[in-house]
Length: 180
Image (cartoon, rainbow, N blue to C red; front, top):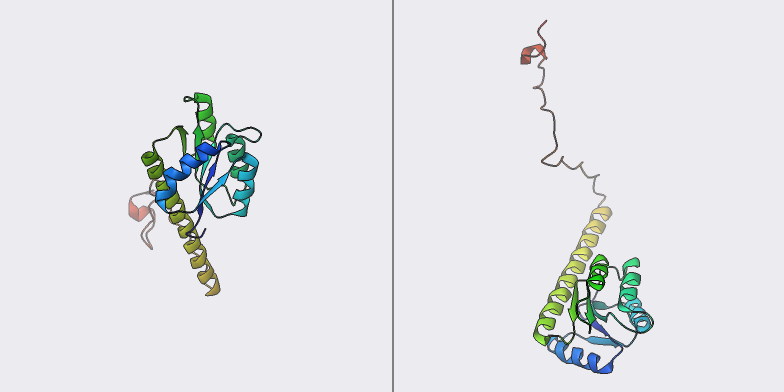
């Protein structure tokens, strides 16, 4: 994902979208908007989304439906999602959201400072993860191109039981084992 990835805001109420844009504008990241779950899915598939702020309760394709679709696709699976709800905390909604891997469930109206802090952290963490993945792919490509020898087997985990090796040339009898 390029460093200009958008923060996608999704809500079926224009006033909420405006409030979210006002709260997040100081981050200096491009902001996108969608007014339905279907429109959000289309924008997600076009790519270049760094964080998704998503209304849980929308007519038609709701927020949880969008997240379910996102998690099925490799290109959108790891995009951080903040689910927004105008209703009091609903434990069933929260449980369903967190099972789907939603980063947070936020009740609106939101504290702009807290929202900015949360979104900045999610955005930066996601960007760093993508940069590391790209670096690993580049290093693997360099190794493949150089014809690197097959990798050595990984050592056993530290908690694995590995029987002690006998010194070279030692016989069981010399080690105090069977004496016949």
